[in-house]
Image (cartoon, rainbow, N blue to C red; front, top):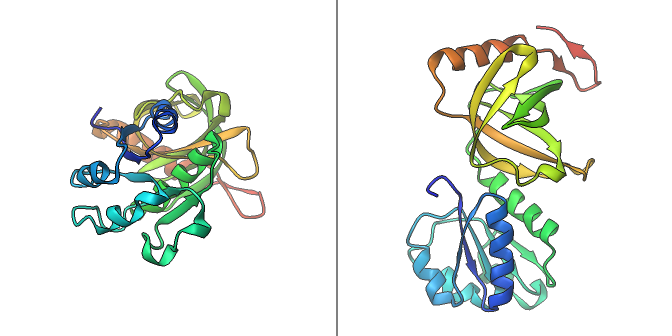
Length: 228
């Protein structure tokens, strides 16, 4: 689907590439497996969100002139055998084998987190409001005029598609949200965060959301509530 982040998977081992592609697909990404560096380099001529590659492919890929500048990259292999200076630079992360699913998806989340556009409005931490995302129980962690961050049990990690509906019963508001990123909270490994931006909502719905954001109680750094 066009709204799924496109991830190039440049791995020579077909079994490993298929497994990683399946994990990405389950989390709402569009994996593009390519067994050779040349085939992967050709794919960089098209838009993509992330490159996952074997360390042995790094030289040809970095020399590809069609590659998206400063695109986030995860290189799989032994970082000690690869010179980070002649690879991809600051946007590169190294992941050793054997590849663990949870660790890989954590790396993916971190890579795309760094790629997010600059926030245009202030984010407000809130008192964990109950919400329902596509029928799945969740809690709102923070809000802004443009979007929100949800927290839900990790058992629902594959529940949310690229676009989903968030309903806040307490505020009697429901909005359509585009999923922008996912992340596992460092202090609650049994949960998962979804970051989303409001998308394709009627003006009246967007206005209702902004009213909710303006009036929702905010949590301060010491844990106390501030009522607007």
